[in-house]
Image (cartoon, rainbow, N blue to C red; front, side, top):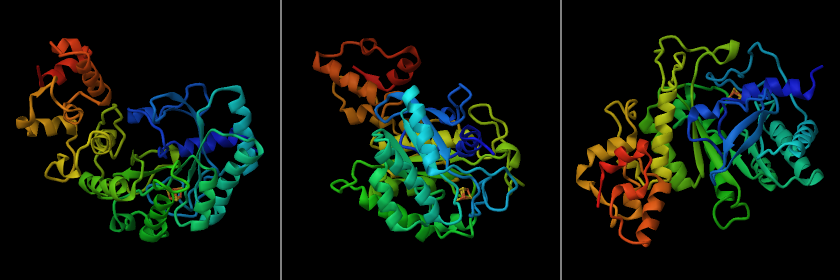
Length: 383
Ligand code: SF4
C-alpha cells in the first residue's frame, strides 16, 4: 500500500506537463523545473505580482477514462495507477504549508470514471481546506471537460483560480486528438460558462481563469492558435493562456503517433522534442504582445506557413517591418509607444516615464539599461 508521498511522486510526475495555473515563470523551461529538494510535487512559480514561491501541484488520480492521443494517461495504457483521497491531500498540504512557506496548491486530475465524480474529489479537497482547516491561501482547481455547470458553481465557492484546457484552436483539430469528448459542448461551453460567472461585476470576479493549448499534437499553426487566444482574452475575458509543447518520450510510456515527425533541436538544447520548445517560447512571446504590450492580433508577424518565426522574437520582427515607427523620442513617446521597442517591457517603459517627470532625459545612458538590453533598445530610440 502506497503512502501519500509515494502517491504524490507518481501523480506529480504525471502532472508536470500540465502548466496551466494562474502563475508562471518567464522561461517555459522553468515551468518544468522542480523545486530541487527531491519533492517532485513542489514547483517554483512566479505570481502575477512578480513574487516567487513554491506551489504543491498534483493530480488526484492518473487513470483516465478519456482517450486524448497526446496524453500518456489516456485510457488503456499500462502504467502504475495512483489516486489520492480529498481528505488525504488536504491534510498533507495543510501540514506541509505549516512547516514551509508554500504559495498554494494546484489540483488537477485525470478523468476518474466520470467528469462529475472527478470534480467532486477536487471540490471536496478544496472545501476541506477552506472549511475544516480555514486555509485562506491560493487554491487552483482544474475543471474537468464535460462536468456539470453545478460542479463549476461549487468549485467557484472555494477556488482562487480555475482552469479548463482548450488544447487546440477548433473542433476540427480536436477530432484528431479525441473521440470521447465533444469540443463544443465539453470544453467551449464550459469555458464560456466559467468566464460568465467570473466576469467583472459578478460574485466570483476575483477568481482567475486560465486555459492551455497543447502545441503540435494536431496540425494547427500558430496563426490559428493565436486567433483563438485573441478571442479568449478579448471576447471571453480569460485572464491567462498557457502553451505546452507536445513532446515525445514522456517517461517510459511514450506517445503514439510520432511517425513522420521531425526531430529538431529546440531553444533549450532538447533534441528529443517533436514540437520544439522554441515554438512554445515564441507563442509565449506573442501572447505577451497581445496581453501586455497592446498589440492587435492583426499586427503579429506570421511567416507564409502561418507560424511565428522560430529564429526571431515576434516583437523584433514587427519593429523591423515598421521602420517608419522609429526612432522614438525617449522624451516624448507615450508608454504604449515605448512598449513597442524591442527590449523594452513594462518595467523599463515605467522607468523612462518616471525619469521624464524628474526632467528631460539628456542621454540614453541616463536610463540605466543593462548592457544586454541597451544596444538592442537604443537602436530604436532617440533623444
Ligand atoms: S482527459 Fe486529461 S488526463 Fe485524460 S487523456 Fe485527456 S488530457 Fe489525458
